[in-house]
Image 1 (cartoon, helix red, strand yellow):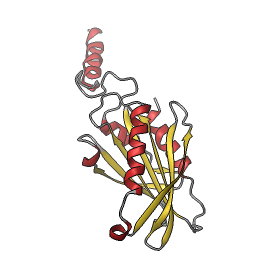
Image 2 (cartoon, rainbow, N blue to C red; image 1 turned 90 degrees about the horizontal axis):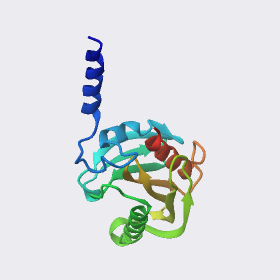
Image 3 (cartoon, one colour; image 1 turned 90 degrees about the vertical axis):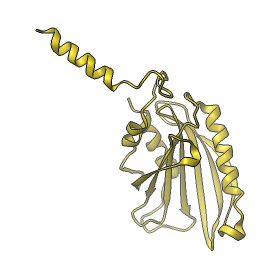
Image 4 (cartoon, rainbow, N blue to C red; image 1 turned 180 degrees about the vertical axis):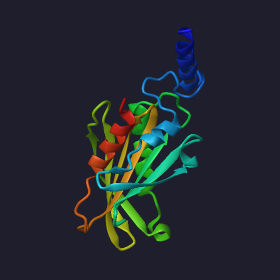
Length: 192
């Protein structure tokens, strides 16, 4: 009779494991997309979480979650995707950072009212895993000066893109820290 509870636990545990053919299922640190989305913090570095939407431009299993400061003066987006690569790595993240910067700086200002130029790149260390590769962009959205931080890395077995856009003026709630936001998001996904 004592074997029954142990068998029940084994059966339940087997049902929770990803299928062997699931993308990334054999990769250490891989999370099912629903679990990865659940781990994203409700609040991080002064940004509050909004809704999650499909991000078909990033692949079939891609979601983007919006974040904003309480005043909505600064906004952020967190995207989780893999582009069909079952084990993305830092090299894949570097390629995605190049593409994100190219897309942001190539927008035609006469059509969008936006212009951005890349100022710098740097590595932002994240406990529990590799750093995030980040680019700082400067420009205008219409008449408003802005600064955009775009960071790419790997978390939860997927590519993680964190984009924070901040007006280049003092904010009522005080300054925001795009690096702290990106680190808190990545850490939540890398937590065991």
